[in-house]
Amino acid sequence: MPTAPPMPAASWTLPGLAVIGGGPAGLMAAEVARAAGVEVDLFEAKGSVGRKFLIAGKGGLNLTHAEPMPGFAGRYGPRATEVAAWLREFGPDDLREWARGLGVETYVGTSDRVFPLDRKAAPLLRGWVRRLKDQGVRFHVQHRWRGWDTDGRLVFDTPDGERRLQTAATVLALGGASWPELGSDGGWVPALEARGIEVAPLVPSNCGFDIGWSGHFAQRHAGAPIKPVVAHWRGADGGEHALQGECVATATGIEGSLVYALSATLRDAIARDGATTLWLDLRPGRDVERLRRDLSRPRNGRSLSEHLRRQAGVDGVKAALLREVLPADALLDMERIAVALKRLPLRLRAPRPVAEAISSGGGVRLEVLDDGLMLAALPGVFCAGEMLDWEAPTGGYLLTACFASGLRAGRAAAGRLLRNG
Image 1: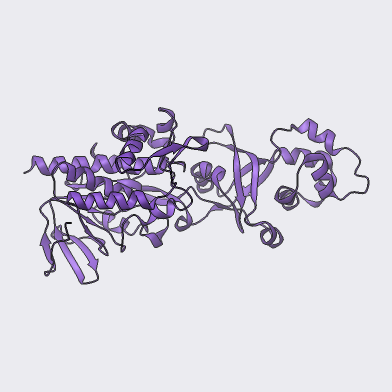
Image 2: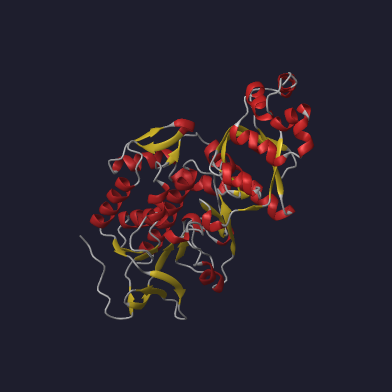
């Protein structure tokens, strides 16, 4: 099994490709470059590779999604055209076949999400790393990249002190700014900006939002699922949109799959207007006219909570939301309650911090890269993965684009090295 070359000196020259970052994008870049015949050294700041990948798969590794094109590519919003080009080279079907090559079979689950049969990330990652080592990729852990020195050498902090590396080609796959304890902390931004590379601010994506509940509501209902509901919101086009799903009350607001799917739109609206409103239909399947009729029936001395439960099928956190949002006088008016059940306004004040988000938006602007994801201002330096300026909802879309961009960058970097001898 190949090992890292000895490094007695503080500086050395690498004959092939340096890949910085051991997430899916970096590992895929290393794999395709090595398959092309290029020597590859991979550098990871943490003590092992793939840490965020492992955590993302803790509840079941959602590897990709079975949604057909072009709908799949449309999930990348403003960057759909650019990401679609990556996916033509390595799309969701290719990703499933690649996993099969590692002995990991997949299946299509609910909502067309794709998982390994055992739903685990660790066996896939172990098999992948083992194969990369067998193919000759050299791994260097606990090497945190700090940028370039004045001679253009890569600078790393290591347990043995500072190391500097001269290389003809580099793939940067350093992640975004979510989950910094796993290595994606956005610490690379100043190094690129110092070289004149335009980086869009890193912002939370697939995140929760603060509303500012009362202490009573937060104490009693944080963690409670709110389902099923239909969310209504106004898009950037001024039109109203709707999506059914579920979310979760938190101590400060809401999160969950439904909210994550809307997070980019909600986040941008807050940035533009200072706050935004999300309306929840708490009783999908029952129209407002029926709710009016049902709630207008005599209470016969029953409490409001019992009346809501019996006549509208609303209790628990949904009933608590009515009490939290509506003024006291509205809770005496069944007409206003019926309307609120179909359109309860939640005023979102702020997205949760990027360090808490599942992923981040922003990053190296795609306009400063060529088709092979090489920085025009830094020939020989390629970028891949979540550090690029694109974002996507959860559901396998994030991972698929990370793999695809890593393949494109690794392939282009290898081609450059081979052409230049």
